[in-house]
Length: 491
Image 1 (cartoon, rainbow, N blue to C red):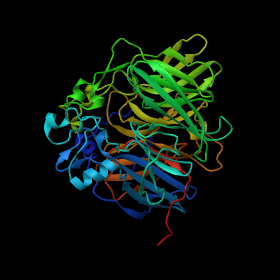
Image 2 (image 1 turned 45 degrees about the vertical axis):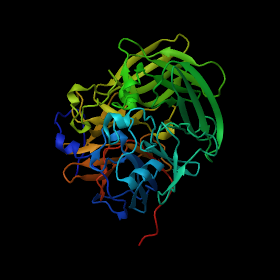
Image 3 (image 1 turned 30 degrees about the horizontal axis):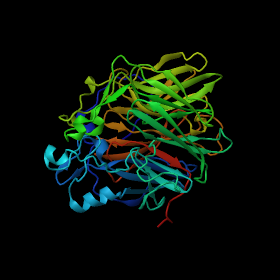
Image 4 (image 1 turned 90 degrees about the vertical axis):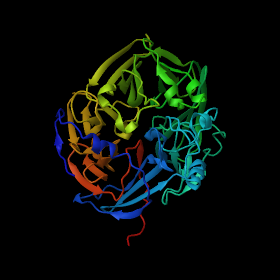
């Protein structure tokens, strides 16, 4: 598969069959060397791309109701000396091991997957299986597979073997959760930090904000209580603040308790009601600011920064909460009937409490990031996964580089038969320009029913290399870059 940088706005539509073919069931764990089949891997690219997502989608002839219920599988691609070494391993959670031995589902899924036996077998069974399928980060000597409703799982950073649940050195209690979306402070407090959170929700919600130094030691810890139910998947940081957007949702657990819905299917929007920004001082001092947010729904934020007493927050907004009902097949989703994710900028005046919102791009998008050295600072450039056509809701098939100062953008396209995942921007060692580096992206190649890894120049989105993976990796979730060198000795 080849593609080249183009200006955004082409109108070619995708093949539903190609897109749906990206939801397979991974059957193999592999370890092998890879070379580029097109172009060359940059010699300066030294480190490892880690990526997480659902891998086990079927057991005993029964498929998950939604791909988000699939068991987590870690992919690592270790780069060095112009080559790459691939590994993939399932996260062997206790639930995964139990169900693999049984050859069938024994736990219900948050997004609607039922265990065998119908409603009667599922009613009143409120156990959650930690599926460790959402993100993977390398921090403080730990490689952690993350799922926001449970504890992290620690993995061997080279072999990817599962070591077990990790309480982060006793920071977390048994049964406590840790966000699947930590943020990485490049040095606002004088040192790099990982900033994460956990939520206990109900009629009131408690958010615990934790910060860890580069050795993995807890250096800041605070808990704040809020009224009302909170669904928080992501957040953003600035030098002084952690910024949460609590979406205006209601949770009616009746269908979950009675066994015919997953917990996530019990969420619904509250039309006409605004969400809230929860602005938490990172130093733990002072009161939390609660400010009304625009209507709609946000899964992911791109970045935030401070301009005096104004917070600037770039996020992907939907007009409504998106859910897959109990009778729908996730592989047959009608994209035209669902709201598109739109990139918007909110400016939050802390003095007055006023919020202004501007559309940065009307093109359907998700999974955006800035240069990690600019996390929490003003950033000129962002890289984001976008749909191929300029308007409407479609699967993500292209990577866009956006200049936030001028509004100009470049777009690398994998269409018509390729589908992109979250782009990961890797700064060039020693590089000074904000866009000096590479963008790594896992692409589902509908033509060969397998996955490719594409390396782009972050400045102009030139395609530098394509690696054909010997795996069909399902459409996934999040990943990260680590400077850790985890290649074996060449054969």
